[in-house]
Length: 493
Image 1 (tube, rainbow, N blue to C red):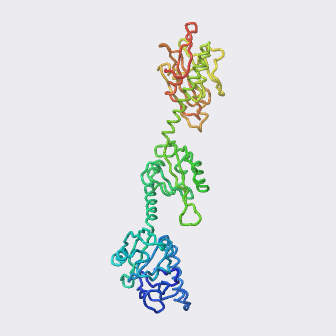
Image 2: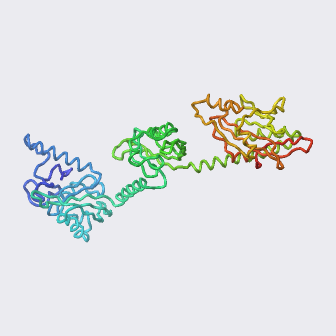
Image 3: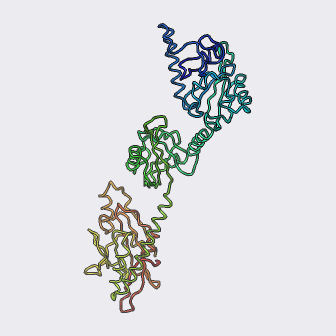
């Protein structure tokens, strides 16, 4: 045990030492002097000779400093129930200084109401006869007369030969203890299997704690992810994520959640996800100046919601395009002008190129197209009526045979532009085409032609279900029009 901070003395009471006679001071019996100071056999300022005396003084000073530096209030009793130790936190909670507390017999009349003193003292001193630690709650008195509910942990102190020599008691205010327990319970709950991911990242931006949700999202186990750089888990988007973590370490948490699109490397291959993330800077509570310990990163996978939102935005845009297209083509006198105008509206946000081939007899004739070398409007082909030299098995010919839609891609990576260009040239398409959708045009039970949408390699694959919403044939002229048709978004095949 330690020494009274304010009396400048030390007791011999400790786990392996016999106590001095309770309350003796300078050879006098009974409790401490009028000022209530505790008794000791070795004063700190006694100036005893070198060797053992100076070592005892240094040890007492160190122990007194340790006691005063504790976050919990601590007091100790000898075997007779006399207070022998009282640290600074106990003084802060109850208001009684060490000079006023050390040397008193129990808590009666000053730290506890007299009516409760016998029960409180009995429960504290009962720790001398029981191994382990005992926990109690008491109402103690402050120096100003107010009461405070404290939670105590008491345990016996063994002297020489293993005999009980006293009791030490650590206590704190119940509300502070409950706040601490709530904080611990909250942190434990967050790191269990909750409905969002929690990752604690150290100052080197490496995970130190990962909960079950985050482990599943990152494609690993809770222990296997610890200490690994995020770049080993995230293929794309890791730079933005690490920049956000570094910003939180330096500047603090942002005011609102942020969304990150990342591509993960998993056993099943790469997958793209969207995480809505919040960040907290973690600082040590044991230092006067906040020292960053890392970042608490909490996130939820909102990929399905974001994709649904993007799809809704696209549908809303396509609906607006339909409305604008209908108003535009209604003013066109020439059916082919109406068709090309409608295709211009259909291209926006859907494809990079469009080709319109109409049936003349048994042949497909290129009638209208967008420029092959640069973006531009869909225009009629000068000199028309020239058959398109499609080879056997061409997607446009397959669409005519199936009376439906055919989707195809180059099947080469982004690192092989020459292969993609050769694939497109073989099919008589612009060289930057990498994805294609050919859909048949029909009206009144007749096949009128084929409409082909083309996208570059940097765009996503053209999906056939969108083609059904982006292409249609409506008859805009009578027999004199030669059966020509206007093509536009919004109708079925």
